[in-house]
Length: 476
Ligand code: GLU
Image (cartoon, rainbow, N blue to C red; front, side, top):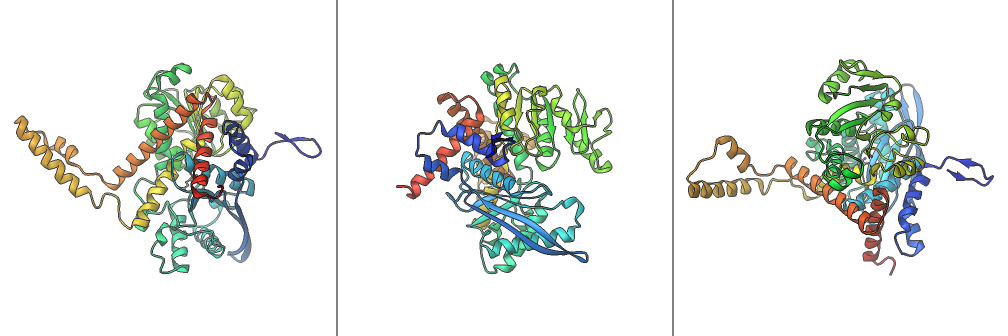
């Protein structure tokens, strides 16, 4: 909340909320105020309106692309299609991208785009028309390009939209040998990288798993070490929530509730995620899943008994009106900005561990970075070294077998000899990024006596950005 000129208290905008988090962190950084102001500010906001003929009518479409920071280029961030899109939201999400990229050491400035449409109510052909027109508007204003600004999927968009963006870009800018790198999250057949689709959900899994490995942290919330048997609630079964749920289920955690727009389902003994998805595809709803209890008011699912709560849908879902009912001991922010600053303070006082969005959902952009590098290098990961490592492994194994006078089984051989494929390399790069990011934040929190992971993550991000400003010599 903040006071306006008439001194009335009005709710703070999403951008102000992030500024508050930034300001809390800035107290730990002894640097000139002007530089902090520059880091916080949104550099470029492009708001556009364009006409698209839908049926017999001409519709005016409102859309945005915001570049929050140019301290590293290109700018990077998804494009969302939602009727709720507005300038404040896109500016905030662009800012979060800047901090996210800095934390996981991905050399991009932050950006975000949005088109104010409800894709559920628009035909595929018309979504294509809108996407292509939006892309040509971006090209016209120099807001897209492999070294300028590289969009990706976000809420309401996916591989399909990314391939239209690439196709429009390459037809308007022919001859650009790096054109594939103008957008990430593309289908594999069009220059995408294996492992991008599940990357954000898998990153969420790696981040929470790492916290659960820390004895001291688990003790502080009265939980045992490890994921096995942990009770988890996930809000949102989109690309992020669905993949995260699958990875937790496979690792032996118990998914006690899943929440979607139409309602939530609960089973204290656990839900089989793949069965729920099967049910969702068949009935177009998660409700009435065999053996589970329906919860009609989907928000109530957040308040159920659990160890870990993972909001993986939209912003501001945990606020001052429901925060006191939240029972989770750990909250993993898979969505961007799911907790309001007021709720955040209350949860901190209660000792809840919050793994912040600017770290936890960075898996998507991390693998986007791998895709961008693949597109610029024009070679698939593993192509050069896979066969070589397999031959080396075979030779090594032969020596070991001869020395030990023992042969191993064909199955064991297959595992040992296998050279790394693209998916193996992408996943190992993602795992390493998430684990090292977690420890950088945790170590900083401890060494600087910072109270929570969010502030520590912001401090880490701001320090990184300052470092690159210093290196660039812009502020001698
Ligand atoms: N939309 C995703 C995010 O918010 C991915 C961004 C990207 O890959 O550039 O992190």
